[in-house]
Amino acid sequence: MTAQQTQIEINLPNLRNNLSFLRSKLNSNTMIMAVVKAFSYGADSKIISKELELQNIDYLAVAYLDEGIELRESGIKTPILVLHPQLNDFDKIFKYELEPSIYSFRILKEFTTSIVRHSKKNYPFQIKFNTGLNRLGFTQDDINDLIFFLKKLRPNFLFSHLGASEDSQEASFTLNQIIKFNKICSDFENKIGDTFKKHILNTSGVLNYSKYQFDMVRCGIGLYGFGNESKYAEVLKPVLSLKTVISQINTIKEGESVGYNKGFVASRPTKSATLPIGHADGISRLYGKGKGKVFINGAFAKIIGNVCMDMVMVDVTDIECQEGDQVIIFDDTTFSAQEFASTIETISYEILTALSTRIKRIVIN
Ligand SMILES: *Cc1c(COP(=O)(O)O)cnc(C)c1O
Image 1 (tube, rainbow, N blue to C red):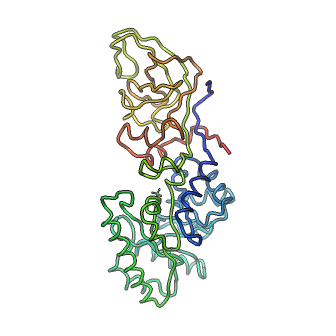
Image 2 (cartoon, rainbow, N blue to C red; image 1 turned 60 degrees about the horizontal axis):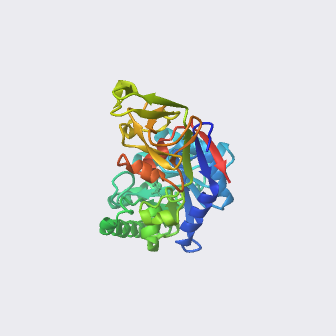
Image 3 (cartoon, rainbow, N blue to C red; image 1 turned 45 degrees about the horizontal axis):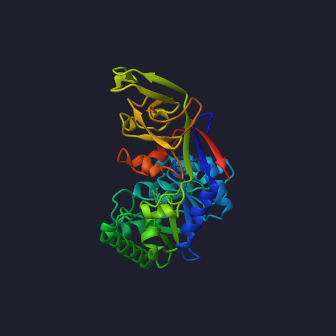
């Protein structure tokens, strides 16, 4: 198959498939928050969020303010949680009607003074509790002060985040986080004299602990087609495919080298193919020197030498191919992003979110 350029295909039918698979794990009234941070895990957050909005997603989540602004500016109306707001964000949070996660007293104080400054009434926000990940959030010990500082403000959700929901060996750690969350929430609710909606599960939480779905779940990687366990490859379908093209084929004599710093030295007459994708596109240098491989005309070709900024070279000595042929780096059938990532001992999340915005995105619908 011939190709023109390096491109990412965004497969919307696969996204819809994954959403309905995740929905099938939930009660009909449990809401789903789609996590679209980091460019929707390397896809394109506007395209993904628009499609999810069409599918009646209840909530979206981004990590940082600007990601939320971009969605609002593109016309997204769904509620958007900003998971990790910073002190100076609140003017814009109000302006763009984003919902902040309040995770520390420092952020809470700024939020409460901004609320007053903007004369906001009943502005939606969520409170994050730390139940063991030790990353962001209030603890049990903070509850009295928290209620004091909240005064009349009422969160519309209480939430926490699991640290090992994909790891069955850590089930007791996970269950302990859930118990802690229940305890913190009921303490908070008793002291404040009201009840609140809650959420704690991420994708692997939905797959492994769906009993604890509370009122909403937060799904990222599952929507993009990965379940953190190989058995889910049957049902979840990768949304992103990364494809490129052979730009040039070179014949390398025994003893000659390929690439910077002579990263590859031919021990036999070698045919190499140069591909227009490099570490600036998200292909880490760690994939070089024979670790990573790509798929060309039905066979795998190893990446040889060092990954360059804009190119990689692969060994096609035993593959019938020509300049202009399509190259699959990962896709939804032959070789998944998870498999590609595992060649350098990393995870799908990292390869996907590393994909540069300079790669052309093509929507398949
Ligand atoms: C990124 C993130 C998620 C999504 O997790 P997945 O494993 O991708 O489903 C959920 N909640 C929080 C707080 C996150 O930071």
